[in-house]
Length: 226
Image (cartoon, rainbow, N blue to C red; front, side, top):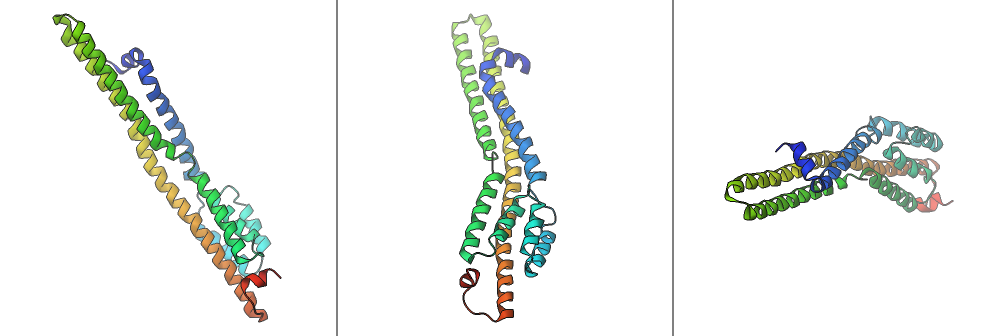
Protein backbone atom coordinates (compact mmCIF):
# COMPACT_ATOMS: atom_id res chain seq x y z
CA UNK A 1 0.00 0.00 0.00
CA UNK A 2 1.48 3.33 -1.05
CA UNK A 3 1.56 6.21 1.43
CA UNK A 4 -0.77 8.37 -0.67
CA UNK A 5 -3.26 5.55 -0.97
CA UNK A 6 -3.02 4.99 2.78
CA UNK A 7 -3.66 8.71 3.48
CA UNK A 8 -6.60 8.82 1.08
CA UNK A 9 -8.14 5.64 2.50
CA UNK A 10 -7.63 6.63 6.15
CA UNK A 11 -7.79 10.41 6.00
CA UNK A 12 -9.63 10.97 9.27
CA UNK A 13 -7.15 8.76 11.11
CA UNK A 14 -4.19 10.52 9.49
CA UNK A 15 -5.48 14.10 9.64
CA UNK A 16 -4.59 14.70 13.35
CA UNK A 17 -1.05 13.43 12.70
CA UNK A 18 -0.69 15.74 9.68
CA UNK A 19 -2.04 18.62 11.76
CA UNK A 20 0.58 17.94 14.46
CA UNK A 21 3.26 17.86 11.78
CA UNK A 22 2.17 21.19 10.28
CA UNK A 23 2.06 22.85 13.71
CA UNK A 24 5.49 21.42 14.53
CA UNK A 25 7.00 22.79 11.32
CA UNK A 26 5.65 26.28 12.01
CA UNK A 27 6.97 26.28 15.58
CA UNK A 28 10.38 24.95 14.52
CA UNK A 29 10.86 27.66 11.88
CA UNK A 30 9.59 30.49 14.11
CA UNK A 31 11.62 29.45 17.16
CA UNK A 32 14.74 28.77 15.09
CA UNK A 33 14.60 32.30 13.71
CA UNK A 34 13.97 33.83 17.14
CA UNK A 35 16.58 31.83 19.07
CA UNK A 36 19.13 31.80 16.27
CA UNK A 37 19.04 35.43 15.12
CA UNK A 38 16.50 37.67 16.84
CA UNK A 39 17.26 37.13 20.54
CA UNK A 40 21.00 36.34 20.90
CA UNK A 41 23.40 39.26 21.25
CA UNK A 42 26.74 39.13 19.53
CA UNK A 43 29.84 40.00 21.56
CA UNK A 44 28.18 40.10 24.98
CA UNK A 45 31.51 40.84 26.68
CA UNK A 46 32.07 43.85 24.44
CA UNK A 47 28.57 45.11 25.19
CA UNK A 48 29.13 44.89 28.94
CA UNK A 49 32.55 46.48 28.69
CA UNK A 50 31.01 49.58 27.11
CA UNK A 51 28.13 49.60 29.59
CA UNK A 52 30.53 49.26 32.53
CA UNK A 53 32.69 52.13 31.30
CA UNK A 54 29.65 54.39 30.95
CA UNK A 55 28.34 53.50 34.41
CA UNK A 56 31.69 53.97 36.10
CA UNK A 57 31.89 57.40 34.44
CA UNK A 58 28.45 57.99 35.96
CA UNK A 59 26.98 58.36 32.47
CA UNK A 60 23.83 56.40 33.25
CA UNK A 61 21.69 58.11 30.61
CA UNK A 62 24.28 57.40 27.96
CA UNK A 63 24.27 53.72 28.99
CA UNK A 64 20.46 53.62 28.81
CA UNK A 65 20.58 55.16 25.32
CA UNK A 66 23.14 52.54 24.29
CA UNK A 67 20.80 49.76 25.45
CA UNK A 68 17.99 51.35 23.44
CA UNK A 69 19.97 50.53 20.30
CA UNK A 70 19.37 46.82 21.03
CA UNK A 71 15.68 46.90 21.95
CA UNK A 72 15.04 43.56 20.22
CA UNK A 73 17.56 41.79 22.46
CA UNK A 74 16.20 40.52 25.80
CA UNK A 75 19.62 40.88 27.43
CA UNK A 76 19.79 44.58 26.60
CA UNK A 77 16.27 45.13 27.94
CA UNK A 78 17.22 43.53 31.25
CA UNK A 79 20.30 45.75 31.57
CA UNK A 80 18.23 48.79 30.65
CA UNK A 81 15.71 48.03 33.40
CA UNK A 82 18.51 47.95 35.96
CA UNK A 83 19.97 51.23 34.70
CA UNK A 84 16.61 52.98 34.82
CA UNK A 85 16.44 52.15 38.54
CA UNK A 86 20.07 53.06 39.23
CA UNK A 87 19.07 55.98 41.49
CA UNK A 88 16.76 53.79 43.60
CA UNK A 89 17.56 51.67 46.69
CA UNK A 90 19.39 48.43 46.08
CA UNK A 91 16.43 46.13 46.76
CA UNK A 92 14.30 48.00 44.22
CA UNK A 93 17.00 47.59 41.58
CA UNK A 94 17.11 43.86 42.32
CA UNK A 95 13.31 43.62 42.09
CA UNK A 96 13.34 45.38 38.73
CA UNK A 97 16.05 43.09 37.40
CA UNK A 98 14.17 39.99 38.58
CA UNK A 99 10.98 41.15 36.89
CA UNK A 100 12.86 41.89 33.66
CA UNK A 101 14.62 38.51 33.75
CA UNK A 102 11.28 36.74 34.31
CA UNK A 103 9.65 38.52 31.37
CA UNK A 104 12.62 37.83 29.09
CA UNK A 105 12.74 34.16 30.09
CA UNK A 106 9.03 33.73 29.43
CA UNK A 107 9.42 35.26 25.97
CA UNK A 108 12.43 33.12 25.12
CA UNK A 109 10.75 29.87 26.20
CA UNK A 110 7.51 30.70 24.38
CA UNK A 111 6.06 27.85 22.26
CA UNK A 112 9.15 25.62 22.38
CA UNK A 113 7.61 23.17 24.94
CA UNK A 114 4.73 22.61 22.52
CA UNK A 115 7.10 20.58 20.33
CA UNK A 116 7.40 17.88 23.01
CA UNK A 117 3.61 17.84 23.36
CA UNK A 118 3.12 17.55 19.60
CA UNK A 119 5.61 14.68 19.46
CA UNK A 120 3.72 12.77 22.16
CA UNK A 121 0.33 13.47 20.60
CA UNK A 122 1.51 12.39 17.12
CA UNK A 123 2.87 9.14 18.58
CA UNK A 124 -0.42 8.44 20.36
CA UNK A 125 -2.45 9.16 17.22
CA UNK A 126 -0.18 6.79 15.31
CA UNK A 127 -0.75 4.12 17.95
CA UNK A 128 -4.50 4.73 17.76
CA UNK A 129 -4.39 4.26 13.99
CA UNK A 130 -2.43 1.05 14.48
CA UNK A 131 -5.02 -0.38 16.86
CA UNK A 132 -7.90 0.66 14.61
CA UNK A 133 -6.20 -0.92 11.60
CA UNK A 134 -5.62 -4.20 13.44
CA UNK A 135 -9.18 -4.32 14.72
CA UNK A 136 -10.56 -3.71 11.24
CA UNK A 137 -8.29 -6.33 9.70
CA UNK A 138 -9.25 -9.03 12.20
CA UNK A 139 -12.94 -8.24 11.76
CA UNK A 140 -12.57 -8.47 7.97
CA UNK A 141 -10.68 -11.76 8.24
CA UNK A 142 -13.35 -13.21 10.49
CA UNK A 143 -16.08 -12.45 7.98
CA UNK A 144 -14.15 -13.27 4.77
CA UNK A 145 -13.89 -16.49 2.83
CA UNK A 146 -10.69 -18.52 3.12
CA UNK A 147 -9.24 -17.30 -0.19
CA UNK A 148 -9.48 -13.61 0.85
CA UNK A 149 -8.28 -13.86 4.43
CA UNK A 150 -4.54 -13.58 3.78
CA UNK A 151 -4.99 -10.55 1.50
CA UNK A 152 -7.28 -8.77 3.96
CA UNK A 153 -4.97 -9.53 6.87
CA UNK A 154 -1.94 -8.19 4.97
CA UNK A 155 -3.82 -5.05 4.02
CA UNK A 156 -4.93 -4.44 7.61
CA UNK A 157 -1.44 -4.95 8.99
CA UNK A 158 -0.04 -2.60 6.32
CA UNK A 159 -2.56 0.05 7.38
CA UNK A 160 -1.63 -0.39 11.03
CA UNK A 161 2.12 -0.14 10.37
CA UNK A 162 1.69 2.91 8.13
CA UNK A 163 -0.18 4.67 10.94
CA UNK A 164 2.67 3.92 13.34
CA UNK A 165 5.24 5.10 10.81
CA UNK A 166 3.43 8.39 10.21
CA UNK A 167 3.16 9.08 13.93
CA UNK A 168 6.88 8.44 14.43
CA UNK A 169 7.77 10.44 11.31
CA UNK A 170 6.22 13.48 12.98
CA UNK A 171 7.35 12.74 16.54
CA UNK A 172 11.06 12.11 15.91
CA UNK A 173 11.84 15.43 14.13
CA UNK A 174 9.79 17.33 16.72
CA UNK A 175 11.76 15.78 19.59
CA UNK A 176 15.11 16.44 17.88
CA UNK A 177 14.14 20.05 17.22
CA UNK A 178 12.86 20.39 20.79
CA UNK A 179 16.19 19.23 22.22
CA UNK A 180 18.18 21.60 20.01
CA UNK A 181 15.93 24.59 20.68
CA UNK A 182 15.83 23.97 24.42
CA UNK A 183 19.63 23.86 24.52
CA UNK A 184 19.68 27.21 22.73
CA UNK A 185 16.97 28.55 25.05
CA UNK A 186 18.91 27.53 28.16
CA UNK A 187 22.07 29.20 26.85
CA UNK A 188 20.31 32.52 26.16
CA UNK A 189 18.49 32.35 29.51
CA UNK A 190 21.78 31.80 31.34
CA UNK A 191 23.29 34.84 29.59
CA UNK A 192 20.31 36.97 30.63
CA UNK A 193 20.50 35.86 34.26
CA UNK A 194 24.23 36.57 34.26
CA UNK A 195 23.59 39.99 32.73
CA UNK A 196 21.35 40.90 35.67
CA UNK A 197 24.09 39.93 38.12
CA UNK A 198 26.73 41.86 36.17
CA UNK A 199 24.51 44.93 35.97
CA UNK A 200 23.92 44.89 39.72
CA UNK A 201 27.64 44.41 40.33
CA UNK A 202 28.74 47.37 38.23
CA UNK A 203 26.06 49.61 39.76
CA UNK A 204 27.35 48.72 43.21
CA UNK A 205 30.90 49.45 42.10
CA UNK A 206 29.82 52.84 40.82
CA UNK A 207 28.06 53.63 44.09
CA UNK A 208 30.99 52.66 46.30
CA UNK A 209 33.45 54.49 44.06
CA UNK A 210 31.38 57.65 44.43
CA UNK A 211 31.11 57.04 48.15
CA UNK A 212 34.87 56.67 48.57
CA UNK A 213 35.47 59.92 46.69
CA UNK A 214 33.14 62.11 48.72
CA UNK A 215 33.83 60.26 52.00
CA UNK A 216 30.14 60.04 52.82
CA UNK A 217 28.79 57.52 55.29
CA UNK A 218 25.66 55.43 55.48
CA UNK A 219 24.21 52.43 53.79
CA UNK A 220 23.73 52.18 50.01
CA UNK A 221 19.99 52.35 50.54
CA UNK A 222 20.21 55.52 52.56
CA UNK A 223 22.58 57.08 50.04
CA UNK A 224 20.31 56.41 47.06
CA UNK A 225 17.24 57.78 48.78
CA UNK A 226 18.78 61.21 49.35
